[in-house]
Length: 101
Image (tube, rainbow, N blue to C red; front, side, top):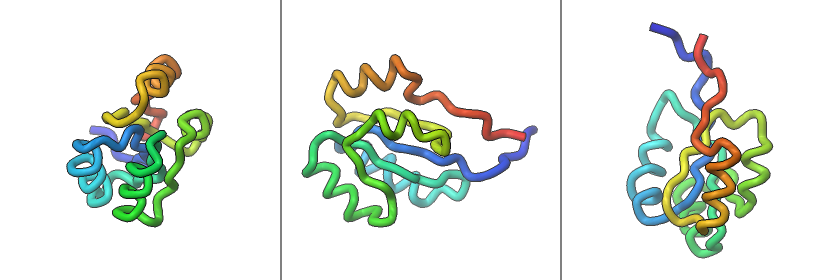
């Protein structure tokens, strides 16, 4: 078994209903994960999620999160526009960097 070097730094992409009701709370309470960003193009959804995780970066720029080398994983939930989600999938959304020793 490989040991985790550090908590996996996660950017949650898409803040639809399931993401906000299930994924977001789970990530906030998971000791092996650190939620570092939330991405959503719908300003109202982004604002609502920000109230649940005020210390987490909230942005509508998926490109910035993709370019951030400190983000280990970018799971894609619902809520993002089809074009934003497609861009993320093509660019490696959901891939993880090397977080294991």
